[in-house]
Image (cartoon, rainbow, N blue to C red; front, side):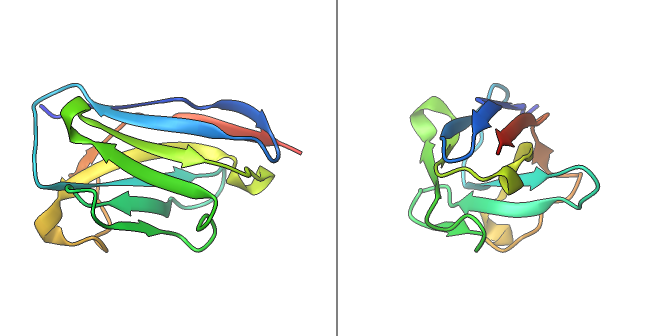
Length: 125
């Protein structure tokens, strides 16, 4: 079984930084895209960033472009999300998900895809 585990969340003041990690501790996989999504209370899950298996392509939501950076280290089975210049509106539970790259970078993962348990990010004003 593929098992994704997020870490790195916490409480930070506006303007601060956090680095989230998504590690696959289960069955090794390849040719998967990985994305970060977030969900704030009372709101729907929204796309944050995604990266191809090779790391050669990265996509970002307009709301985080220029502030967040996604990266991949396949040797360590890890995808990271560096979050800078954090704003209170970034407060949410952040999830990582993985899906076969052949589905495309614009694919919206479903509950049938691989998801982590989420990590809380809270940005105070």
